[in-house]
Every structure is written in C-alpha cells, then in structure tokens.
Amino acid sequence: MENFRIPKSHPRYESLMKRERLIEGFRKGIVAYAGLIAHGRGEAFDYLIGEKTRDFALDSQKAAIAAIILAKNPVFSVNGNVTALAVDEVIQLAKILNMKIEVNLFYRTEERIRKIVEEFRSRGVDVLGENPDSRIPGLDHSRALCTRQGIYSADVVLVPLEDGDRTRALRNMGKFVITVDLNPLSRSARDANITIVDELTRALKNMISIASEGMTPEEAKSVLEVYDNNRQLSLALKFMSEHLLDISASLEG
Ligand code: PTJ
Image 1: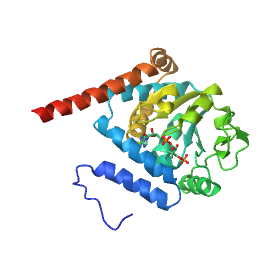
Image 2: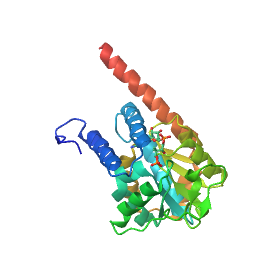
Image 3: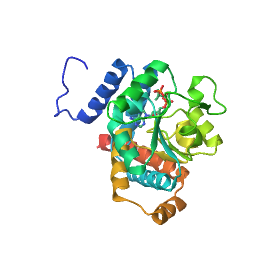
C-alpha cells in the first residue's frame, strides 16, 4: 500500500479501499496489468448507478442464486481481480451453495495461477485450475485451459468480470453463464444468461444474504421462469440515463 492511510471519514472511503485492494493484489502478483484498467472502467460505471445496489441488480442476484441452487455442478470461476477484491466472500458463497472454485485467467501465467491458488489455500480452501486437463473449445492460447471436473463439466458457471469472448465460448458449450459486470453494454453482459449489473463485492455480500435465507427448488424454478436478462439490462441502462438526467436537472436548479 502507499505510505498513507485513507481516512474512514472520506466520503468515498469504500471505493478507495477497493482501489487499494487492487493495487495490493497487483503488487503481490495476483492482479494483471490490465486488471487495473478494468477496475477503473468498473468504477466509472459504478458512478452511473450512484455506487449502490439497485433493484434490477437485486433481482438478478436472486435469479443467480436460484440457478446455482438448481445446478448439478456449479463452478465459481475466479480471476486476479475477483481474488484481490473478494477472496473471503467467494469462499463464503461457494461454501453455502456447494460450488467448486476454479482459477481461470484471461492473461494466464503459471506464476499468477500459483499465487491465486495460494491465496485460497492459505485460508484452508482448495481450488481447481492449477493442473488443467481440458480446453474451452473455440478459444486460442492458454486462456482456454480449464479442468474436467470443474469448468469443463460444469452446468452453471459464475464468472464475474469476464471477457466477452470467453463468455460466448462457455455459452457455446451449453453452459448457463452468470456474470457480474458494472458495464451493461459489455459483450459479457449481453451474452450471459444472467448479468448482475453491480459492483462485485456489494453483489457477493447480497448473494451471501440471499443464499443464507435459503430457497426451495420450487421457489428457484419460479424465480427463473420469469427472469429475462435483456429486460434487466434495459432496466440498468434506463436507470443510468435517468440518474444522469436527475443530476443534470439538479445542476440547472
Ligand atoms: O485476472 P485475469 O488475467 O483473468 O484478467 C482479469 C481481467 C478483468 C483483466 C480480464 O477479464 C479483462 O480484461 O476483463 P474486461 O474485458 O476488462 O472486463 C471486465 C469488466 O468488469 C468490465 O466491463 C468492467 O466494467 C467490469 N468491472 C470492473 N471492475 C468491476 C467490474 N464489474 C463489477 N465489479 C467490479 N469491481
């Protein structure tokens, strides 16, 4: 961390602390260079929803829990940013919902994989991904690498902060893909079965609460029956537009 402390009284304390976690993750070799850029893009979109979880995101979070509850082999795919921001929340949610965790990197290096695996292992949690034995078809290079018992055979994959190419490739494998992405315009957001337009750590905390309350398979089925991802994306875009118009009106006085 830099040689100063962010005061708790700072109006944007939470956001600045997340930024510090990313920087710390980068220094530890967990976060990719591009991860810092991706975080900045996320921050900009978070402004557009007022840095709060909105109803459209809560509905998607509930649908995501429903899909995971109904899954046979749900897998939580983690990358550098997700680990740096929310390793403890990932572990907690995966435990409640009986999900496997697999490290799957876009900018894959063996060293980064090892460091991320160690982040989980030091908390007593074993994760997949260190010894891949399969490939996601249609993707070139090492970013296609995955494990047979994890992502390759998963029916539902939760892949937050994901690249559009891989989301599409997972869909082409017939998987049900859930993403968390503050940008409703991204290709991942448009291609996933469920897109949670919310900041990752806020989303995971809410999902932990929803999952802890419990949901019967019947309830889960009825939540999914009425879920429409395009409608949720449209609500997110409308919210952002109206939010900006409100701010603009308040400036006109
Ligand atoms: O660790 P690796 O090698 O797997 O690389 C991870 C990154 C994130 C660098 C890689 O997957 C990547 O390049 O992703 P993209 O294409 O930049 O997409 C990331 C998306 O996540 C963008 O649409 C951002 O707006 C969004 N995003 C960034 N931070 C957050 C976020 N969404 C929710 N919460 C965040 N904290």
